[in-house]
Length: 366
Ligand SMILES: [Zn+2]
Ligand SMILES: [Zn+2]
Image (cartoon, rainbow, N blue to C red; front, side):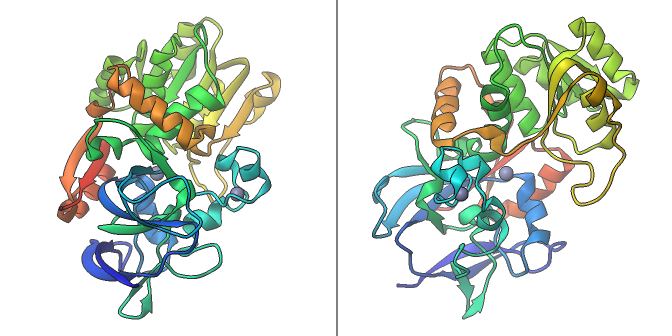
């Protein structure tokens, strides 16, 4: 049975999204229909407008209530409250070996605009809409989601609060807890204090990592980073960032994360490391093009440069853990969140781009 719902539709990447009626197709066996109650807004939602042919629907941090399940779905039932995290195919080598974050089909399940079999999840008056963004497209009042994305969370937190967790926050904390698996005594430098960087800092504090050095050019953000667990902050506008980090850590940081996509920060995040150190790059200065990169330090200090895919976190394991930390007052994600009504989605995206809102979250109407 086709369901009509309201979604935020992108008709032109540089134009405001429009709330319009769209039709959801029938569920496949491994899919779940979710009534969305809240959804986070992530930078990738804004970049995603360029990646999917218009018209398209983004959104990949949904929270909601299961309404209907496909014939083969066994892990959730109608009425369950779910958090919707990243997509994975479930049948490739990585997925079968408990590494869904390294799914061989990650790009297609995330950005192809439809299901892996090429079929559409959403149409509008009989015409194709690029959706299934992260196999969810949660900028809508209802969404078809793969069962694999779903995390059941037993928590009294509001839906809007939960919607902050499933992507950027998961990734930042994942780098610290899973990818680097940091321990007390490790040192960490975090370049950029957006949602990913601040989540890494909060997780590092929780794990007893010290020093934790936050680097940014925004004074307010550096102050926030300090309040969330950074033991030191560096204003990059004052220059000599690698030297200052080396001084603070004695012989350089053991680990660094670049979340900025800025070429200078990228190079500094490598240069600040001690021998054998590891740098995780969340975003490249020019993802599809060449950029200036000085590999000398990498070579002489035997450093590792690593890509980041959701911080190598398994959402069903790390999201509940982060929520529990949050409930215990040890992961104060509320300081990053700004709530908006669904109809104000364009304002939320604008505030995200302008850095006014670190983690915008949309609340759906009842
Ligand atoms: Zn896979
Ligand atoms: Zn995201």
